[in-house]
Amino acid sequence: MKIPKFQDLVLFENDDVIVVNKPPFLSSLDEREGGDINLLRLAKNYWADAQICHRLDKETSGALIIAKNPEAYRSVSMQFEKRQVKKVYHAIIDGTHVFENLLIDLPILNVGKGNVTISRQEGKRAETWFNSLRYFKHYTLVECRPVTGRMHQIRIHLATQRASIAGDEMYKGKPVFLSELKRNYRLSKEQEELPIMKRFALHAFEISFKINPEEEITVQAPYPKDFETLLKLLEKFDQ
Image 1: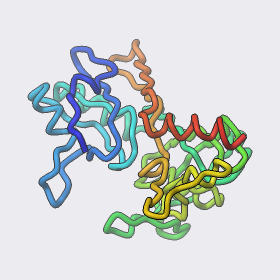
Image 2: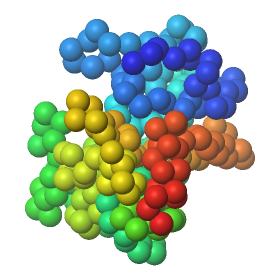
Image 3: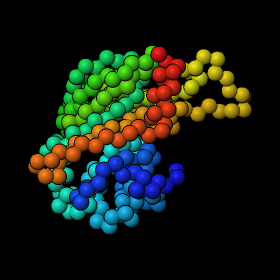
């Protein structure tokens, strides 16, 4: 991937925090293998004391909070711990689903190596609210509001509703191909068709938190190009 300029990712900045729009395929922190550039390194080049306050999956795009000093880091981390940070994600899911303030509260167990499972016996509390925003013939745009912050929480909770995120093959979500949406779409025999999005369709759309008790900061992150393109194609060919 092309390494973005950190300044181009900034959505909001004050003396204490920076909120960025994380591009897809950029890790939040160092991965175990090392090597790849990540958001933390970009942030530290911009602001030496930068610390990332939470993580997004590598493929997930959207709003992410970076603290500029230890006090801000502690403050935001405590709000995450106390479930006071409000997070809104948008996802494009397989199938048409009517979710009206649907609460999924199935406990999640981290089984290691980047895998999680639902376990009522051993899992940790996990709660997500879902609302359908827009309907297409074969897909739905949904708003997801996680109360807790478990690994893969939104992805696995949607999968339990047979509403996997488009392109999320780990949870049985299928990639979206233009040939499935557009009638008479033809490729030459030599061409291999690529999915419209080369990742799962999940975006951290909005985040709200406080730096001081009086002032709540709410930041929205515009859709990245791939998410925007998929939505436009669904509007055009899947109504």
